[in-house]
Image (cartoon, rainbow, N blue to C red; front, side, top):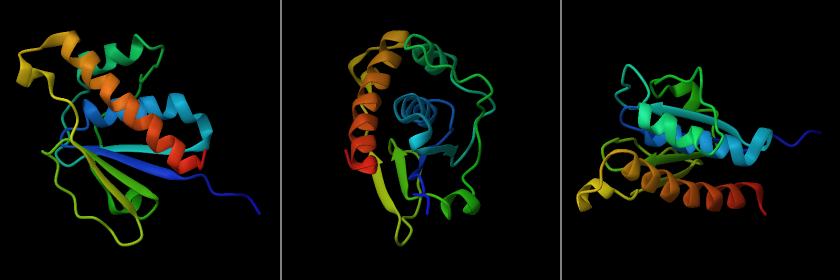
Length: 138
């Protein structure tokens, strides 16, 4: 009997920045060991170019990714749902691990542009590493 890989859904409001960062970082870290989805409660048209660039700096390629809506199909598939930031609102589901990550917001400290995006990325990366360890039981 094959062990089903844990599946995680990262959600933010637009699915153009934070949830894409988390998904890219988790895919890079876990490889095929974790099935990764990302979605937005109000999907944008495109990914945030700075989010894409901040992942490219770590050698993570998210070409072909695009903002997607949250669907019941995905919600019914995953073991864990992580909402990034406070904009996106999602109801927890029974039997599904549910977390809200209040991610670092450097713009509140006057930090903008790529510097802001790197800080956001690194905050999310630390959280993704912890989640990966918990999901994989390592």
